[in-house]
Length: 556
Image (tube, rainbow, N blue to C red; front, side):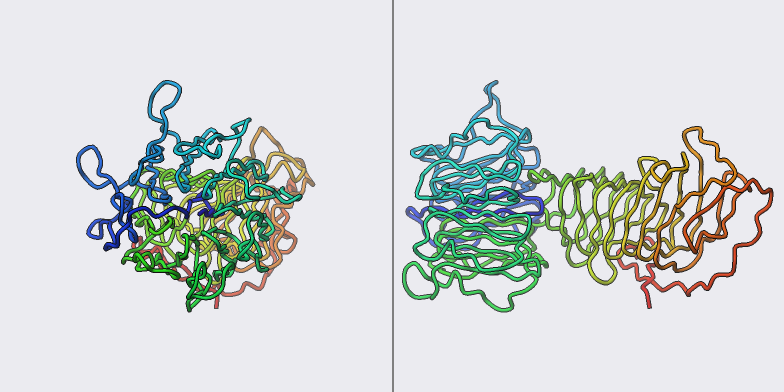
């Protein structure tokens, strides 16, 4: 029916209808699987047979998939959508644009029972296929959408935190009174789900089997099956609700979670079956298996979708020319960064990107973390430069490691370790961190005036230093004797700067490690810094940088 990944991918449908299906083995390349689609379950109408490209080769640049009733859809990295399977209502083929040309700016794809939806980069939604209930006609104004979801015969869009619904009405879009602050949506058979920013889930529509009776939990992703709902909690466990039991319609075990219920990163719901993606890239399936829909093939996957009686999954890629993670969808990488990847060009992260298994991303050019972007988990990043204006949320333990020249004003929680240089951006810039490890990095700070907004600052619970501190003037500023600059707000210092380079010698550094300030004094010579008890720097383990011969040091 429908699912929505809060991180970067928009709702991928998980609903459909069976028609002349037959059981078959999983389809999909295993010899060279990167960027290809694996499909398994009911084989009828070719729904599990992804098409070949113009050179009669397997398509290797899929970035998202959606399974419908008896058809399947795949979003390619160039923004086009490819469809296969039953096409009686034209649900496989997106319409042409106003210039009678193929649309090339899709960022998300959804498949309903007999209809399909695509979200474009400009925030508009395109619908095609059967339109008996108006499910393919987006209400006006058709703009500013950030997510899309397809139920059986209805459609949903998310705009500025509010849900817009259209199509068949069995209560699917009788929205609750409080419809603001939604971040994800999902459509099932005659019911809908919405995930709020606070982690709660709202449900409305048909509720004969308890599919709108959502349990409590801090949820980060949702999915809607035929008559059941699924929610991924922040702790990696999955909750399922709807018809209980395993032996009679419509209960076939789709709400009975298998063990171990842990380390999941995404969920999807079929008609009578469920899927969950684990952090290691494997997929767990449970529920009705009449057509082999719970017999998951081997592989490392980054995205998945459940159709009526078939499933689709996207094999992980490890090499990219350029990489873009966008909040409205994915144009060159799935949201789950759970393996080492290499980018020959640049990488840009515009929204949440979750990491697992401590992977390493190696980028030849620049990694850009936009102000809307967030990296979550434990990972290593290697690049020529790293421009960070978003949020880095390190996991427990080693957290996030960056080997690059880093610039930007960002927020970091957990542990962030940098090898290279760090320069707060936007001159002046502010970096807020929990534990910031600069034991193998030089720090570049700029001063352009006496008030805090006019000079760089670092605010940290713990600051580990070991490299040089370089301070420069900018904007033509000339300090006057007595001018004081509160560059650091640090609760705990570890280590000391190997050297401190100033515009001239007329500075008093006596309060640097105590109060985080330096003062322009006008003195020609500065005496030695006052004695400070310097804890021994802790050893950090840099597994992600081993190929470069670099060492991370872990706190004792």
